[in-house]
Image (cartoon, rainbow, N blue to C red; front, side, top):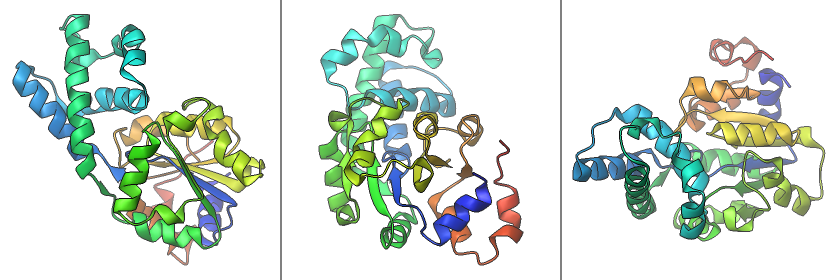
Length: 259
């Protein structure tokens, strides 16, 4: 589906259901993650370029945050072998450093806030669309954050890693909201996320996809997954939705992703 059609359907709230990722899409986790990385690197006297470190470690944390420690340890070799920013360290040192970052991040992420535009977008879509969250975070953590921000009542279902039959990029991760809704017509659904895994899961499930380049993944990396629409932020998305002349928007021309 073209980006113009996606925006038109968002403008008219024509989607049956919208599935949001959580961390990096609704919740701004970049500052808590930067703080955790900086503290651990300072303690362990590690030097590395922050942007690449954020990208790699953020991707790892996205995939393991719902795992119990025992599962992380069992799969640690496969999880950490591609951590190039720490390639000069032994495997055990990589594991130790990453787990320290993860522990600090879990603490600091409790202070994270919603991205600007989140409440406005959710309120707007909820008038006619069924809203869901599918995340690799724990359901309890997601609920606590949503309740703190007083937006939990907007969602028909909230599914953390502990409630999913599989993790993204598997399309099976999106089955709970689809099954609860009773609607399996893919193009009536929109998946919104900040990671390639979000887009890949949505596309494999036959859903429309929207990438938000405000999380850990850089815009060019997210673009490689070829979402139907790619924007830099929820605020930008809101501005486009509120534009009465979408087809003539100069901003839209810069967002197009050719299939």
